[in-house]
Length: 586
Image (cartoon, rainbow, N blue to C red):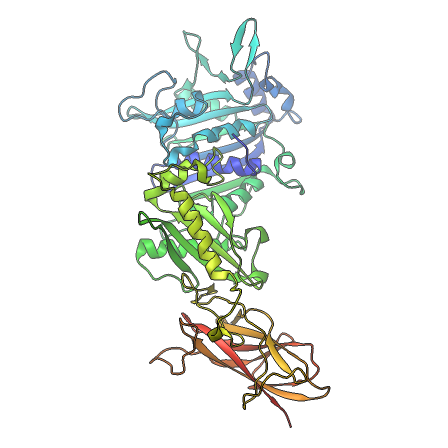
């Protein structure tokens, strides 16, 4: 399987789902994970009739010792709406013209030939994790596939978790099969109605007779507490697979008007786990909303959600679209898993998240959630950069076209986009030295809960200025902006808050503070005259101690250590600057 930082159950979910998706007959499949124990009768039947003989060496011979009070634990992964494992039953038999060799590829061949290509089927190595998930390295495989003009049932046992060994002067691969021994001594699958009857007797859920699909029973699966990547209370295998599906396969659970691409079922014992709902999961919903908004606009020609910004990521020479980047931003305190905040979910055509790439973060109060979907025209470029576990894009492994590495170009453009959007400017120009000014990004502008054209730039300390334009004086009270401008969602409407503090001044002096805002132009200046029908920011009030007060001016007595927030409405598609007027009260 190669090295990976992912937990076993994450890899198992990703690889088995990908194999099922590759075998889809239409745009919809059913994918099930069931974690339970066979009955005593089913366990006896399986060991007495299917696995009554074992090799002298290897972990498979430990299978009888895995019974728990006479019952064998199993983990079943199945799909329907797929083609099943058809084609020749042996690897040395050539498929007929137009026929696939799915059975031989899955059951006989370990590894993947280059002739399989790098399309959706780049997950050929993934079956190895099925045997890794078994304490004894054994799976029972049942499939219904169209062979000729009829659906054919096939059943075979396979072990793939042992290393090779020598015995009596012969070399053994460590791979074993349980089935029907043919005249030439090769183990073939049980075929036909008998295969279905035996599978049912052994406790395997089988598809309806007129359906095609595959069911894999992992015998004696690993204990969940052993296989998890972090130390936490043990969960069921099904719940860990559910978590993995939510984290990595959420695009398949989204409904774009005709039902989700994958109908998931996760079951522990006789209890079904909750339905996958990415748009309701606090860890995933912002990624899902960003992606869904992008797909809806692309598929149906609708407008993009005002809470999502979409950018084409392209190479310069040659000029070629590499993918689409969709971005959302939300309040950090309302977001879910902190490990996924400020990341980009990288994907290509299989629509399983490859990894979450950390990027430059917005101001502390907010977190961004972004999705990059590689363009179909360069899908093979990205596929070639993936290791066998498909959990990274490795630049040096990507195919190079001439002297152009599109994976390198895409990752670089993604990084540059967020650096430009959220990177602080070290020095402000003269036109930006108004306290509380925001900056329009040359590439994207910010996206703060639906506010486009908003990015934060660092500001110098803002001195107080009275209506007569008095100069700074250290003995006088002064005002400064202490944090970058922040999004405030008030009654479901976007507002922007500028946080100030007052310092200096004589003890007991009272000051009246007022604020006003203007739109910032692309050159860093402000608009004195509003364009016809253009929205302008308006002052809403002051936030003090967490409460919003609809007062035009704020009274402050020096010395003061508190922070006050000037709140304005935030029109779409503009950046806003705020300025303060401070007058000594009578």
